[in-house]
Length: 451
Image 1 (tube, rainbow, N blue to C red):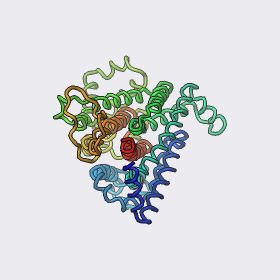
Image 2 (image 1 turned 120 degrees about the horizontal axis):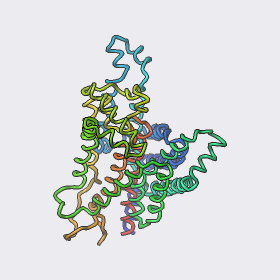
Image 3 (image 1 turned 90 degrees about the vertical axis):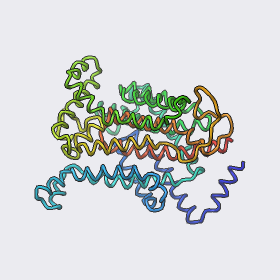
Image 4 (image 1 turned 90 degrees about the horizontal axis):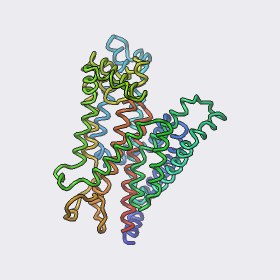
């Protein structure tokens, strides 16, 4: 009761302008996140358009949310550095180096480097808008978003059981899509729901409502099996392993913080993976193991091997931004691994920037706040175990497994399925951050009210 009165008083003490601004942003997020489910069902690859719309309506937060730039400064700098490197290695700059004027070079450019730059600003505006919401508003937004995601989960379950029956019916009447594209669209929808799972689980666990969590897991697994998207199953399994590993982190390893151990492990898919593929190629194992793999994984081995071979031809500066498309059909659009694409196109500098981004993401992935001392116990203990009302500081420990699991999900899918510049996928990353920010505050609000 005291918490409710305190939150009500805090809201009343805001200036009329602040209440108007917060109310406006709340409605932008309400509408945007509701549209998210519809968008990813009909065309997940159209997510950049939705993110751009939310970002345009939230542009003021680039200047109003000063704390957001401080909190996300390293990530903003690393992503900006990657974009700058992409511009410098674009076909426009290559043409200018050969003597073309800037107008001619830009007109002849075919790699659209300006699109990621525009989305960069709009994505940060949308993420800062989510961060500007207080606990009460975040709870209202995300509790609604839970039901939006539940509706999407129900649709995915129906699609899985009916073997895309709903999509096929809609396609026959309106879109006339090819059967292959129906499967791709279904898989992309599942990927989007997958990235929202851990924020949803965080909030529902804080509210002691596990039913939606369980149903969503079943829907995700059923959809992944029906669409034969084993990458989603691997990502789910890896994220669950991380979740329980962090949640039940042994006290014997308390000197090693779980987020920092995982940060070091990210260097394997970022820096060691190209070397692993090269080793398989040199030893002849790349050809041998393909006979024991599913066709989709055998195709990945071919793509990765070819990407490494071409990368070794220009290992320092790479072939240039979006040059992967030049190697079609052996590399279909992208190498299905973001680290290999960074090295192939942007050379060693691009690979290092990407590795630094993921390393810092895991290294720093915890909720801000001083963590109070936990009860002195021995053996395994759930980091979010509730034996007494939890001080605010301990919420950082309580939510950390969910955040690290969500980051793991995105890392795994990006490592084995998508490329570095797949616009809808990195926009999905921005939505994942928005969901995580809102979920942390919504879960905090739920826990405080319950206690």
